[in-house]
Image (cartoon, rainbow, N blue to C red; front, top):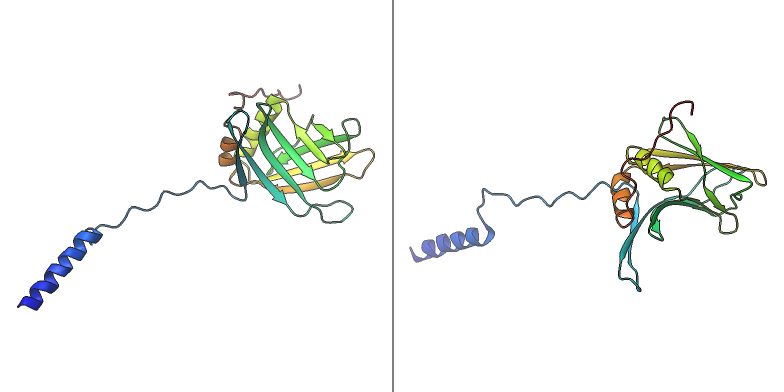
Length: 188
């Protein structure tokens, strides 16, 4: 009888320690769907402000039928939202290069951007253009990019941008985008 009582008490004590056997533990909250986006959070050593950069990498795109690397970054620079594209080849200059993009199967558009030929970087810095880009990016799965230059042969790149809403929110938290980006009218 003592053995049975000890076993029953041990079972009850075990049930109390682990909770009711009929109740399951709450599932951990789901993390946001970030797709292939990577995040880097930094604290400015001077101001103490926190800033996050979100980026995607691509390992291949076509340039004279070769394979190259590049990345797309969303970030704040001098308290302004920007889109930064970096490649491992020369991309032209402000006077000799142009950039166009489209998301998924939506109509494409040619935009103004600043080219840095030596560092091989293109920056979209106009706030309205960054807001338009981010607005379209938020609902997209794929970014198609075309860079043309008078001095170099152009190239096309394709970025898988799934999960962008979290990247946009994180990257532009410290330098918010305009609330309602202006849209061009058809034919304007």
